[in-house]
Length: 230
Image (cartoon, rainbow, N blue to C red; front, side):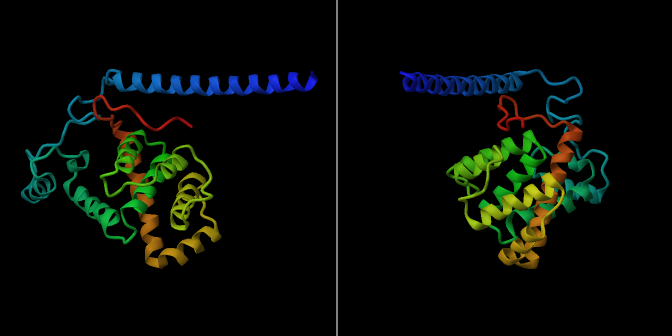
């Protein structure tokens, strides 16, 4: 009889935990929906969805206008193009880090997601998670890796390179200290040049996350935020 009573208590506790988790997920989903539908803050431009209007080439010097035109190709300009030479330099660096390091799109995707998680950048995370989950995108990665980063789970069971990139980024941006073991592991896997590239990959996207905070960049209209609070 006592044993049956204890089993009943355990089962009830399990049900309560599941209901609590379900309620928590429901609350998070409702909060995300509300955030997506909320009106823009008063200082946000409705076209750029940040604190500055979309940059225009009017009034630029001839040299700056050439950079502006080359970087926009008739499309909407990013906020960095208020400073065209800076935008060009940063654009060249990010293009190299995204496609020329030799890491490949999946590892680059993981690094950007780690930077986004550690910097709590809702905009970057939401955009890049969509890349990572898209089966047709070259940046597609296993959903388990995305969830490990998103919910800050242990990296046990992941591939060696994937686990190293996540650990390195967490130590660098989260703890502000990279252990000797993690650094040496990176050099063994990627070499000295690859380790420098990895550090710069984290640095570039953490800097981008900082910019997004300053300009309070909003998600595209109707897009639900995908990064849960810590």
